[in-house]
Structures are given as C-alpha cells and as structure tokens.
Image (cartoon, rainbow, N blue to C red; front, top):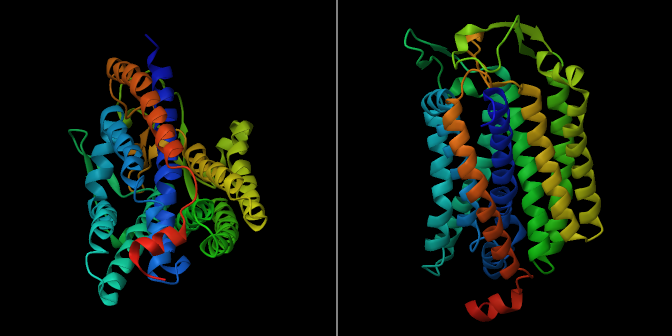
Length: 377
C-alpha cells in the first residue's frame, strides 16, 4: 500500500484531473449554451447548434458527479465546509444546470416564437450562469472563505451569499466565462457548417482575447492580494486535524509556490500558449486543432489555480489556521487506497466510453438536414 503522504498527493492530482475533465468535456456544452442564441440567427440554425450538444451533455455531466464524489469520499472536511457554506451558490448552479435538459425537452414542444424565445433565454442562462459562478467560487478560494471549526471540528460558515461577490471573485468569474465561451465557440466551429461556423470562429477569437486580458489582470491582482503560507514543521502523513498547523498571511502569498517550485510556471504558460493558439487557429479556420488548443488552455487555467493554492484546498479568511489543506482534510489512508484502486478500474472505462461516443458522433451537423426536418427554409 502507498504511504499516506503519497496517497494524499495522488488524490489531490486526481481531483485536479476530474476538474479539468469537467471543464473540458462539459465546458464546451456550457459555452455553446451561452452562445447559441447569438450564433444562430433563425430557429433552424439554433436547433442545429443545440443538436451539437444534446447527444453528449448528459454523458459529460459524469465528470461533475465524479468530482463531487471524489470530494465527498477523499476530502470529507472539504465537502462539509463547501457544500454547507456555499449552499445558496451551489443551488443556483444546480438550478441553472437543470434548465438545460428541461430546455432541450420543452423548447420545440410549441411552434410559438415567444415560447421558443423564452426557452432560448433559459438555455442561455443554463450555460452562462454556471460558467460564471464556477469562476466566482475559485476566486473566493484565493480570498478565503469565512468559516472556522467548532469544538467538534465541524466547519461553521459565518458569511452570506452576497459576501462572495467580491470584485476579485467576479473577475475570476469573468475569466471562467471567457474561457468556456472560447471553448464552446471552438466546438461549435468544429461541428457546424457556415455561416454558424464562421460566426463561432469570430466569437471564439474575441473570447480568447477576453481570456488573455482577464487572466492577466487576475495574475497582477494576485501579486498584491493576501495569501496564506504554512509556517513551522508539518507532518504530511499526520492525522487529518487542520488545527495542528501554523499559518500566516503574506501579501502576494499565492505566488510563492512559483518560487519554491519553478516547474509550476508551466501551468500559466500552457494557459497563455493554448489561448493564443486557439485564436490563431480559429482565424485560420482550423477548428479541430483550435478545439484541442482550447482544451489545453482550459487545463492550463485550472492547473494555475491549483498550483497557486497548493497545499490549500479551502482557505479560511476568518481563522486562517482552520484552513483545509491537502495534508489535514483527507480521509484515512485505507479509504484513499481503496478509492484509488476503484478509480484505476473505472476511470479508464469512462474514458473509453467517452472516446467511443465522440467517434460515433463525429462529423458536422448539416443545416440543410435540420431545415428539412423542421420544414423551415
């Protein structure tokens, strides 16, 4: 059996991989949902755009479920603190996600343009709102969340929903929204024919520019934002008790890892290179390569956040010593090992099934075929 320290690191890496998987796979669904009303100029064009994601959106949700399950089983303190303290924000995310299948099902039930317009806006909200709120959540991790541990080591959240709308958190939300708009536009450019593909290429290039600007602005802000640093001795294989460490607040503290581990600079480099390549490839009408480079950019942005926060999982703004880290918020060694064995068995099956589905659904969606089906020319 692997030692406790190694298992904790492995599960931190797996959590990051699941987040990247969710952002890459479900991210283009959200991006297309946020854009389709603007990329499609009439009902047939919008239906064609929706048909590009309807067969795959529910399968892509598997990554969201896997991520939540991993947090629940591998990091129970993190699950308890985040899912209770951020209940209202998560409820809004789930409500927006629920709008997607409902919109897919009910949009075409009536031919009334007002009915379809209503569901088009609902599908827009179902794509744009989660994309924004996921970024706001990550932004609040850098700010720290207002919670502490009571005498029974239970997380107690002392903040409210509107306290999460700090300017830096909103900027992180715009980073996330721009990132997924770029990713969704790349996918739409790959799956659609002109003129929607041409519109998607232009939208993706503008979203890439917005991502470059906002991602850079967030990085500059981090140079002056207070971050946390563990001081003194720490046992990476010790018991899961967050109160056994010492923590101090340091200006620009979230950038210290890049001095301690210079190789981590690869993450923001991936984000920048992937974003620039996506914009250039979209302008050159190389949608397939643009989608790949967009996925690289998405991975780089998420890795940048994870590397910057390491080893913190959920910092506390009110009682910094109560912050949850990789070393003191995990399940037992045996639990992590059993889960790792199960993951090594079932995760490859998920990947193989996903690859098979996308192979079966490869190719572009014909607007002429959609018009024949709908009778709209």
